[in-house]
Amino acid sequence: MSCAAVIVASGSSRRMGFDKLAAELNGRPVLRTSIDRFMASPSITRVVVVCPQERFDALLDGEFPKPLERVDGGAERQDSVIAGLNALDTETLVAVHDGARPLITVEAIETCIAAATEFGAASLARPISETIKRADARGFSQEGVDRDGLWHTETPQIFKTKLLKEAYELVCANGLAVTDEVSAVEALGVETKLVTSATPNLKITHPADLALAEALVH
Ligand SMILES: Nc1ccn([C@@H]2O[C@H](COP(=O)(O)OP(=O)(O)OP(=O)(O)O)[C@@H](O)[C@H]2O)c(=O)n1
Ligand SMILES: C[C@](O)(CO)[C@H](O)COP(=O)(O)O
Image (cartoon, rainbow, N blue to C red; front, side, top):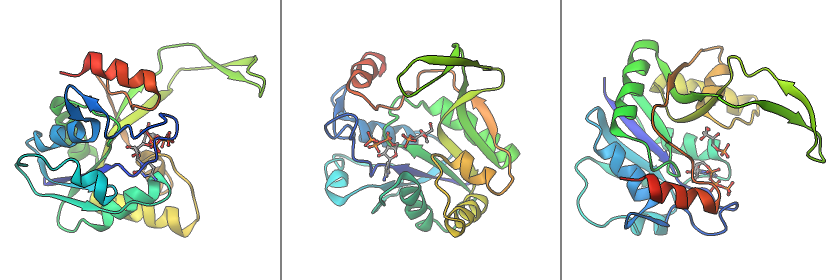
């Protein structure tokens, strides 16, 4: 099945304090590293990057082995995902990925595509492996939360393109706010297969994450 990648990269890096997607990892911008991982995945046929023109222009050094295009994003992540989906027509599957997750591997992308091919909806995710507490506004623990069955979702999140477009139409029609695509398809009543993320795939969010990613990137 043909699979397009939509890489969302229109965020404002508020928690980082500077443009985290332009920051260098191993001599390459974070966003370029994310794009290159999808370019290297055999099942990916094209890459749509959702970001401002100037952020895109800074990435265009060298050749790309597959079609690459850019569209403008929106105020919220879900608006940026919808802008990317609107650029797609023929691909059966779409893999949505955060530009801020540059440690994604080709193996993880291909494993997730295989699950999406089988189930129609798949996301990389990690079972929670620590004790979970609910705290009050002062930061004092109030109770434990049973972690059985709880996962962190990551990206890529990969779906039949028609399904994800329908899900976001419903999200918009009902004025919902979702933080990922798994939540969007849940609004349609559709389950997503969670695929265990076997290697670090952190979302660079705070300055310390960049140092960690630099140590882990290869
Ligand atoms: N309006 C938005 C918001 C986020 N993103 C993208 O969604 C991914 C996950 O968002 P996050 O890491 O939270 O990035 P920021 O929104 O930039 O972070 P912050 O909330 O600290 O500003 C990132 O690749 C980010 O660029 C996007 O394309 N459009
Ligand atoms: C999509 C996501 O990466 C899944 O973990 C995450 O929800 C995006 O981060 P945000 O801070 O919610 O935009």
